[in-house]
Length: 114
Image (cartoon, rainbow, N blue to C red; front, side, top):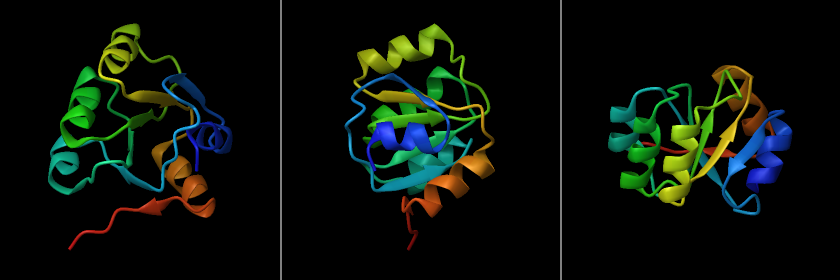
């Protein structure tokens, strides 16, 4: 799925980054330690942690896009940091549960552990 397709599916917006970027897998968590332990480069990070730490963690792991759930008005400092790190940012007012469900039904795959 492209970021534009993802945004459309979740009634969201692409705040920064290339809307044509293709994403095949996603990880959903508010714990950045889980991202560091289990995520793979190239996945979409879905999180409710509206903090620069989410962007920094994505940068370390090689995650090209972060989707913030539960609100669309993401602080400007987070968007600016993401631009500097070349990481796309999406946002939706939907819950993490509904966001993940919609994306799964559209074919976005989860990461697999082990």
